Structures are given as structure tokens and as C-alpha cells.
Amino acid sequence: MLDQYTRQLYLERLFRGVLIIVPLSLLAVLVAILIAG
Image (cartoon, rainbow, N blue to C red; front, side, top):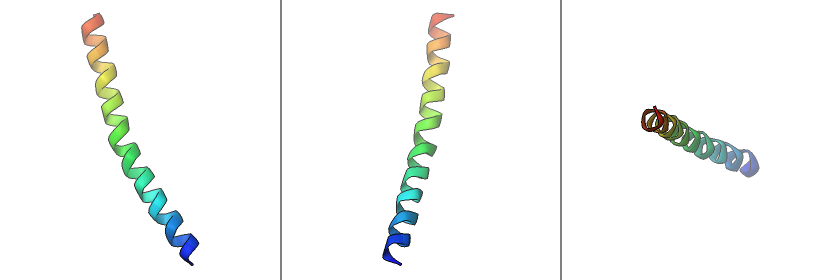
């Protein structure tokens, strides 16, 4: 039971991290394109 709870907590943290990282990387790509173009 504890294992399942820890896994769920880890997945939530991972999901939140992805939600933060993906827009930031997309923004970085857009800025790079604007600078290069």
C-alpha cells in the first residue's frame, strides 16, 4: 500500500515537472527561431 502511494506521489511530481519543462522548452525554441530568423 505504501509502495502504491509513493508511486502515485512520484508520478504526480513527474507530471508536474513535465508540465513546467515542456512549455519552457517550447518557449526557448520559439525565442531561438525568432533570434535566428
